[in-house]
Image 1 (cartoon, rainbow, N blue to C red):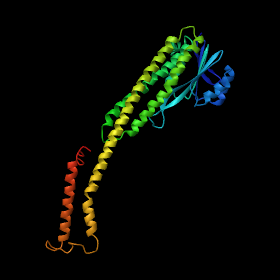
Image 2 (image 1 turned 30 degrees about the vertical axis):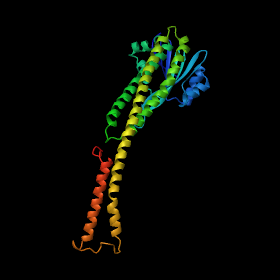
Image 3 (image 1 turned 135 degrees about the vertical axis):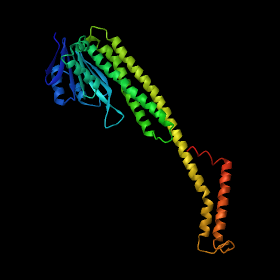
Image 4 (image 1 turned 45 degrees about the vertical axis):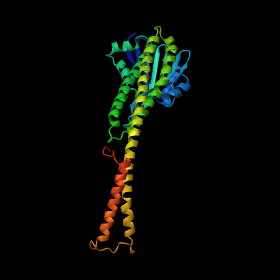
Length: 325
């Protein structure tokens, strides 16, 4: 059968050798219910496509399978945290319908390439075998895109490693954001792995070719990303503890310096307070060094007491080691 692009009920679709691929981006209630009536989809599955908070799942029917998957999409509002995008899929023996918000770039790019008339060879490779194989190709492209996100995580880890020992850098926020990013990806991948294992059995009926090796390859890629994320999680926890220890040490040094400075000022403060009162005190009428005799004597006593306290504190080891602060 000749490959061509068709527009059916305002849905952009691609028909290749009897296999129809419909890609619904930014679905609306009207469009989805029209699609549901045409293919006799369950209304609860249609509602799931419109909702953005569904958990990953597989619903099996006699003539088709409905799948809900989550994948990281691009971050929003300048945030480093990837958003979670939902992908809903209806798969039958001669059709595959993908429903998403349009932010899954690998999927959108794949569909757009297949849609171009000059890409007949590429379209045949993607859609020339079965709906099950096409589903594998789509999921495989989305999983492979996770490696790009993983490389960014590892790059951010390297930057944090360089900054965590820099006393002038404050990286607590960067560490927290990266921990959240790692947690977000793990929260997506763990259910995805479970779905892939189950999906291999459920869609085999839509393909004469054994799809097990293809989906096992996807599972292997997910395991590799999960292993790397687990290592990254352990590493970022070490950096968090290290940053906390170094920050605590720095704070303790600052507090120690301020405490010592305050303690050394106590003799001067006490003496100046006493002799600053407007009453006659012993020694306030001494004149043998001039009119400032009392002031000079008080300064000498205060300096001597301060020096004595300084030397005593240094002997105890309370003063010292601040030069690296």
